[in-house]
Amino acid sequence: MPAELQWGGRFSGSPDAALLAFGSSLEEDLLLGSFDVAGSRAHVKALLGGGIIDAARAKALDDALQTVAAEVADGRFAAYARSSGAEDGHGAIDARVRELAPGSGADLHTGRSRNDQVATALTLYVRDRAERARDLCVAIARDALARAEDALQRDILLPATTHMQPAQPVLLAFWLSAVAENFTRAARRAGRVAADARESSPLGSGACSGSTLPLDRQAAATFLEFAAPSRNALDAIGDRDLALDLLHAVARATLAASRVSGELVVWATPAFSFVRLGDEASTGSSLMPQKRNPDPFEFIRGTAALIDGELLGALSSLGGLPLSYHKDLQATKAATIRGTERGLAALAAFRLAVGYVEWNAAAMTARAGDGYTVATDIADALVARGVPARTAHSLVGATVSAAERAGRPLAQSDLDELAKAAQLDSPLAAPLDALTSVRAKQTTGSTSPGAVAEAIAQLRQVLDQQFGKVAS
Ligand code: ARG
Image: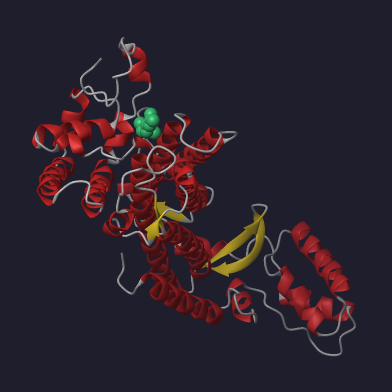
């Protein structure tokens, strides 16, 4: 039996080395190291609080665990763990503690199972990474608002599309504050996951039914900043809801990044030329000397798809599993960690890359009116003069069709014709250019400069109230 396995007494033979390697979770557990050590320190509090070990032993264990924490933080622990022969991160930490505190180390696993240990470490990981995801989303939203304020000053316009076809003119500031809204929702979602990961401490649940030893579970919960110990051991060790919630929150945030990235990739094409990516965010071709590729945004898009795959994998790994711990949960954990780490990297890259986007304000603004994007406003102007909406739609549709055939934009003469066709008793006034169009919008939440300024101010307040004033 390999010395570092945490079990073996009831076996006479050793596990096949290849099967042991197949079932190892050491690599992903290395990312949980600091959380697993914190969980172990909390367990020492539970042992001490319950009078199961004395203060001297508790101190010896805690000193050893603090040394392990330092070795995890400076990276030394990974090499130790890989050469330790341990089956997982829990085993490696246990082995190191027994080395560091020869007289007391063997007490650490008293009344504890790797089942409550991994549930605890994973919950602490969820809390930490959900907070990181939240902070990144808040930072991205704030960056977008700052750029929106700048774009608003400069009256930069663009044609909003539906079905990728020119629809209506909007302010670039409006598009940017839409981006900020999306990331604010993503931040709120991640923040809720982080808050949920402070509620219930699984530690002290044992393998599946609690312990006959009087563990002070409240002391452990308090040390780890949980509100209370979990209520049901069987549920606590088999529950992976928070891991799924984290993965979903990260998937949603990266989805937001993916959609903006997709739009920027299109805007960077010469056919659009709405944006230029700085050299810092571009790559070239090894063959085609002229190429300038929006590489980071493509890879953010691709990475977001991988995270969706991890989310689906994590969900599927739990399907049909009876309550309690099953080794399948190691697959859930691996998918959660892979998806989360990739997602956070994608969000950080997104924040960096969008900083290198330069607006081609002239091209955007010049194209905002292309494709007859003011047509709806003209139909609205007819409606405001008492023409039924269907009639107005049809009249303006015919006007657009005629202008398109003649290959010219809409002009004052078209408004005059429309006034005649609709039998108005005075001239028809309606926007004929993009800037007049956005200024004519009257509803809250619209693209009019006033509404956009208002929306930006309100969203700033929401961000300050919910996430604090200091930019993260
Ligand atoms: N390596 C395991 C995991 O990541 C730890 C829990 C193992 N528990 C057990 N009874 N085998 O899920």
